[in-house]
Every structure is written in structure tokens, then in C-alpha cells.
Length: 285
Ligand SMILES: C[S@@+](CC[C@H](N)C(=O)[O-])C[C@H]1O[C@@H](n2cnc3c(N)ncnc32)[C@H](O)[C@@H]1O
Image (cartoon, rainbow, N blue to C red):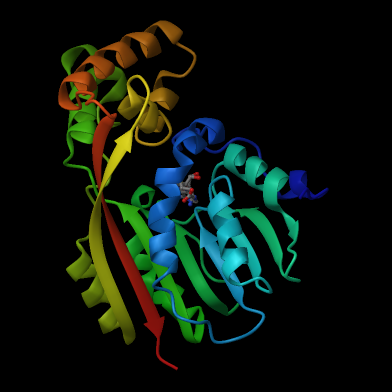
């Protein structure tokens, strides 16, 4: 589905500090990346009004936003994201009326400042809030923006101590890369644990359900962990190195060798364990 007004809603490239995104690379592992969202969706209760009004924060290329329209066919759903590349892809693939009489639209929005501009039945976010250090501070406003009986639900990766991320952080801080990449590998350190998220939502008067799961993902192909992180954790590094192809190739070669040692391929593929945190908070009726 295509919207003719896409260019009006999709701004020029984001600020230099924001990583650039590559929807095609990100979607290469769509199966493993979609599964946690389906697990989250399974725990979201029925919504208070029909047709429901839904916001998807950090919607990316929109494939997960479209799954919301499958569960709530009449719903009016808006995906918000910072990346023009992701928004363009989402708009081209999914924007417009849905077969159930609802609609999907995609808008530019920075989650660091996003506030509900109208009452929502569901505010949901998949694999995005780890990029927004201030996200727990927004919970009161986001819960406040829900209709009574509405839900706020999110899933975030919580694997910052895994070798994939620890090795990336170490390499970025190594003397030969430090001047260009210091700090670019250390992400997610501002995440809370499931029990802390639970406390926050209970304090806000919600019925809350939080948990974590480690998926033991079996990836196939050559250097599949490198291929995976090229779509996500490596984005700030690739953005910082920009058009310097020599530096990009050198960095990727070093990182690839470290990953090969940490995640040796087995007879059926390469196991890449991945911990994720989930939260579902329902506002009192
Ligand atoms: C890993 S992708 C997840 C995309 C999608 N939710 C999914 O599950 O496939 C993370 C997304 O968060 C977006 N993002 C990161 N920081 C953001 C911010 N401050 N405001 C809005 N979106 C942001 C990125 O542009 C990217 O599209």
C-alpha cells in the first residue's frame, strides 16, 4: 500500500548523532526478530474501544506494525520512528487502508520527546526503547495518554553483556579505534530489569506483567552473528565511520574474527543466544 503524501511526513535525514538504518539489512533476520513481538502480542489483553487507536513507537520498516492490524483489523494505527529510511520503507509497503476497515500510517517522531497527542487504546514498542535512555521517565505521560483499560506494552533486547556486544564495546574502545568510535559499542546500559519495570508500572496504578526470555537462536550462513548485528548494534559504528570504506572493512574484519571465536558454527548452524525483556502494563478501567 502506498501513500501519496509520504514525502510530507518523512523528513530529511536525521540528526548526525542518530545512527542511519538499513531496512533491507535489518529485515534479513525478520523471522527471529518478529518472534518476540508475537510473544508480546499474545500477552496484550483486549483493548477498551473499537475501532482501537494504536501507536507503535519505533516502528522501523513497518512489518511488525502490520501485525497489529492483523490482530485488530479495524484499528487506526500510527507508527512513529526517527529514521527516514525506515519510514520510507514502512510507508511504501504498508501505509493506507487495511482490509478490516482500519488504517496504517507512519510518522516522524523522536521517542525521547514523544507524547500521546490523543487517547490511545494501545501504545506498543518493539525493540526500540533501548535506543532511548530516557524512556522510563516517559512512562507516566504515556500511561496518562491511554484510555482507561488501555495497555502499554514493549519488548527490548537485553543482551548487552553477551559476547556480541561486549566484544563490540571493547573493540570500539581499543587504542586504534578509540578516537573515532569510543562509546559507540556501549549501548543499553540504561535498561532496567523486569522487576524494576514492574515496580514502575505498579506505582503508576497499572496491572503489570514483566518477564525476560533468552532465545537460543540458530542462525545459518557464514558469519551470521556479524550479519545480525550489522542490522542493529553496529549501526552507530557504521554511521560514525561513514563513507570511509577502508576503515569500515578493517573494523568489520577485526570484529568478525572475534565473533567467529565467540560463536563457532556447529553442525546445524551458529547458536546466538539473545535475552529480551518484556513488559505489559494495563491502565485501570
Ligand atoms: C531495531 S529497530 C525495531 C523496529 C521495529 N519496531 C521492529 O520491531 O522491527 C529500532 C527502531 O527504533 C528507531 N529509533 C531509535 N531511536 C529512536 C528515537 N529516539 N525515536 C524514534 N525512533 C527511534 C530506529 O529508527 C529503528 O527503526
